[in-house]
Amino acid sequence: MSPSTAEEMEELALRARRGRLDAAGVDAAAAAIASGTDPQTRRTALRVLYYAGSAAAHLPLVRRTLRESRDPDELIHCLRIVGRRWHAVAACEAEVDRLVRGVPWDETGDVRVSACSAAAEHLRGAASCTLLTALLDLHDAAASEDERLWALRCLAYADRATDELYPPERPPLEADAPFARSVVADARDRLRRDCADA
Image (cartoon, rainbow, N blue to C red; front, side):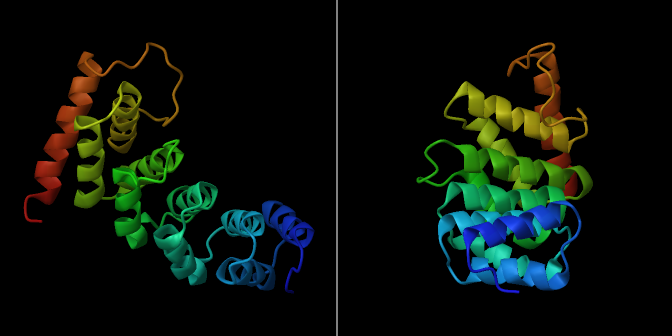
């Protein structure tokens, strides 16, 4: 099946979300991404890959999109795919690191937030000197208090100091509070411990 319209791609996304999409449908979505079709159809095709679950055969395509795209929505979809869904951040570490560190065309910062989330998700279950350093660097050199707090939240989630990346703000998270200082100290200890030989 080769979807020729945005509506047909939406139908594939709906079927994937319901768990009723076969491998040919997943391949059709990947082909739409690779063909450079219109941005909205590519975003919908990325949703198909997200809902389809593990589609490791298409990881190189998602990685290439992370490397080459400047479309924030596409990148956010890709980061959700490799972070939350496929747990494949290790295969895309350089791309995620670049986006955590920020790119000039990410005017809203949404791509950076998604990259930090993917890094934190990965760090909960694996070591990555690169991504842990990137989150600590973001915390230390944040351009705003919001950036610093987001980096802190990601570090806390990565270290399992909190079970939610988006916890309710009770009590409010403050960058200079004892909890925040302990999260940063624990992250630095982890960096020394895990990355001493790196």
